[in-house]
Image 1 (tube, rainbow, N blue to C red):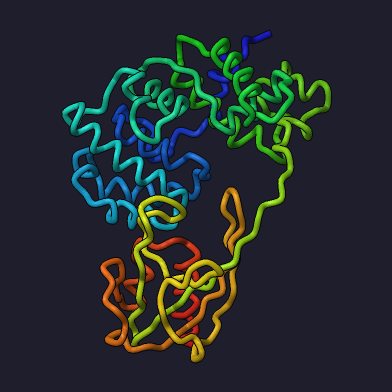
Image 2 (tube, rainbow, N blue to C red):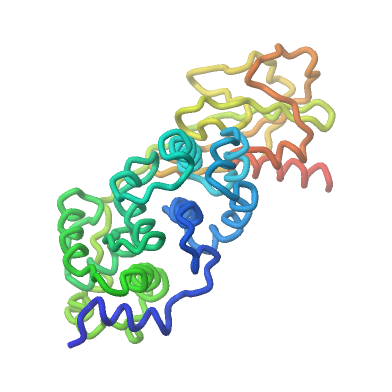
Length: 341
């Protein structure tokens, strides 16, 4: 029987992905940006953002010298904004502590904000030809099925068990091809639903396939009902201008511009809502809760509003293009469509 790693390497050379925009480079900065963007995000969603980001911030120094708001605006819509803040902070650390040159040592890479073991391993492997095992979500699924690892892969015990296997199987030769092959296998063949086992290069040794466990592995996360929260967002409008409010740097949508909120705990802005008109309600799902948003359109005179240092008035189009959360952009785009109708 062909060894697991050899089969992955052979398959990758012929059938794997070779035309992604961050492939074919040894530039650790480009590889780093792509790996951060690909955390919890599909390749198709990343490609356009990656191109825009690399054009706007072509070097570590350019990223470090930019403001956090510029970085967040370029990231706006991709979600999980702590990734963008960590990229910015890490770029500044590289400039301050490594003279602007991306570190080559694994422990130094791992010390950068927002970089965990798998991301550091991918950078080390792809940029510096220093093989390190990876264990992202796709790879967890491949190894859980192939080696019949039961239990939710997100639990520390099961994750440690998977790490032991990936370390054991990681080859010295052709490590770049193998690592990319694992990623591609999980993304294109060993998918969560409807896996293509008939063309999988390691199907002959897959325990889950042999025992008809493909549908049950990896073990799902224990079901937990997401808590639900409600908020009212105020679309304060003066002519064609919208008021946006800067959110605190830490927490949900940290550092982004958003709409002022009124909820059960806080009335962020003192305004008469009697003349408010409701816009279409929407729900945004985070990892840990669901947020039901009721937008209220309020026509107001901005000169009567207190001038707050964390507020800004922008045209509707400029507000849509600002560093704002996805649901806020949907609200403003809906308002624009309503005005144009």
